[in-house]
Image (cartoon, rainbow, N blue to C red; front, side):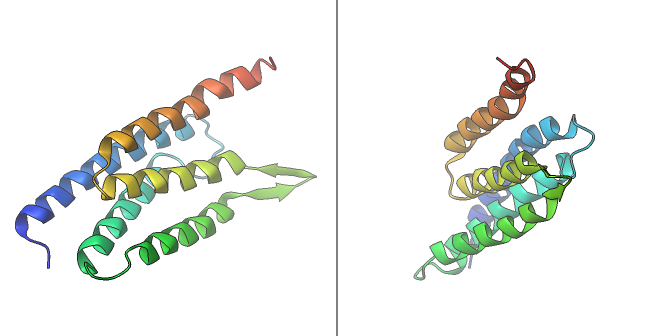
Amino acid sequence: MMTLEQQATAVSYLVVASFLGALIGLERERKESNPAGLRTHMLVCVGSCMFTILSIYAFPDGDSSRVAAQIITGIGFLGAGVILQGHRRVRNLTTAASIWATAAVGMAVGTGAWFFALSATLIIWIILAVLHRIENKKL
């Protein structure tokens, strides 16, 4: 059972996860054609954070990595749902990858590694926003 102090810490982690998920989701949201934007990325980040926290506290003597493995499996299923294929072209692969990476950010926050998660969010944002501009210039 989680103490009230542990629950308060967990809630602060959820707030951090929602903020970091929003940063990634906002970048995806600016492209109106993306099937996963702000709310999706926030929910993925918060959900993976919560599952990670629960796996640590609910199974203190167990193997919390089993829950982490299931988060990854579930996110893979969710990401596959946003990938579209048609006319010899695959679409939304980057959005699916951003969902997958956002889940990892949430898991990092859930373990208390918020600085690591913040750094990963910055790197993800650079990949999505800055490198996209470079790709469009065809350098």
